[in-house]
Amino acid sequence: MSILISIDQGTTSTRTIAYDHELNVLHSFQKEYLLSFPRDGWVEVDPEHLMASVYETLDPILANNIEISGLGISNQRETTLVWDCETGEPVYPGIVWQDRRTAAMCDDLIGAGHQKTVSSKSGLLLDPYFSSTKIAWMLDNIEGLREKAGAGLLRFGTVDTFMLWQLSGGMHHKTDVTNASRTNLFNIHTLDWDDELLELFRVPRSMLPEVLPSASHFGAFARAGKSIKVTGMIGDQQSAMVGQKCFAEGDMKATFGTGCFLMVNSGTKPQGSNAGLLSTVGYQLNQEMSYALEGSIFSAGTIIQWLRDNMKFFDEAKDSENLLHEYGESNGVIFVPAFTGIGAPHWNSEVRASFYGITRDTSKQDMITAAFKALIYQVMDLRDALIIDGVKIQNLLIDGGMATNRRFCQLLANFLEQEISVPRNTESTAMGAAITAGIGAGVFAGSEDIKSMHSQLNIFRPQALSTNANDRINWQKFLKVLMEAYN
Image (tube, rainbow, N blue to C red; front, top):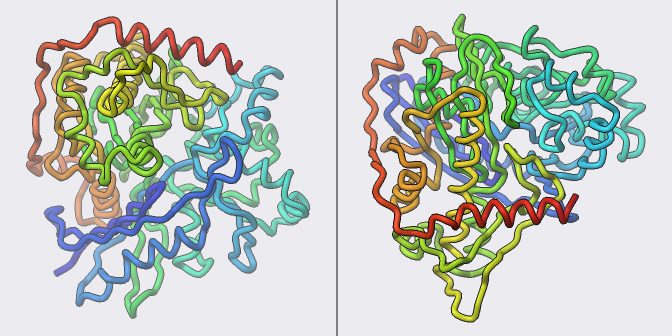
């Protein structure tokens, strides 16, 4: 049997899945790893631990007597790695997308009037979230790196590029258009690295990978006696959009993983935003090109991990469902989950997480419910931002780990007052990487082949709310107070 392999490299774990050509799961392995937080707002990953998680999930699949049609890589975006091109050794830990250390650098660039240029070319904002200032920070703060970069001895990559380099023993230095579009160095109109942006962030072009369509032949690598062709590479949120079959303009999905990312297919041309959303490349599958509008929430699954590991409110993430109030009542408790700042549409790097309204009779359930509601309120803020940009949500498809929490899904439908659709297989990101690889390998002709495949969905229809209607207003007031306090 010939299979497609998907490596879904996420922020805190790697999952590798083997699919048949009907996209049925044959094998699946997952490995978690830890991040480090050396200072307030700093988030790093050990590149060796990251790659170990890749090998530990890929090798059990390769141990089977299988024929591989193609391999697809989906990855956490914006996370930044720089390595020596001669040794392949990273010069510093990977700086994770959540990291906020370059907030002052971004503020200086905004103050100097560069926001309009950056937004018009890259579709993004000047924010520590993106790769450009992370690269600049490494070059400026690690002794000797600026000189090595100038001599052409360093390479940069988001996680997809770093993985490809390591898997191929340095043979291939490539990325795809979706990952490139998350760096603040890529012009989403010309689909090429932009000289003006490179000069602004002081990043030598020699560091940058070759950019290809998402479904392409990125090269091959040998492992376990097999030659494996990499035929798809795509950023995780765009991969979920493909996995959810958001191939038509106006199709929308939200992925609830470590963060939450709401993305709508905006058609074949970039659409600017007046409401703090991002314009980005959605995918490029053969000749099919799509852009997207995106809202980014930095903390989603992170909230549940914190409640479990730090607060010790429950033993396993799935236990949170039973502790979440059925009707969203939190007894006046409000939570802002800004562990590393808050994302779209507010974009504040400095604000930090906080509870408000705790009294003597506050319970564990109140605090857990407030945390879940904080996520729902941020989705509502993104919904309102999309309306400002002329986009109305007709039907929301959601996926990711939190989509398995049925009570959360029902509350989301209730608060949004609209239908929520959840696929039976919530790992849409991994599925999207397999689809992308299948198109790149010629297994699928294009999106039409995928549309014809039946999807099983669980539907959550809105029900009447009994919780205090002022809760969201109070949450917005509290968030405003915090942001003003941290400005």
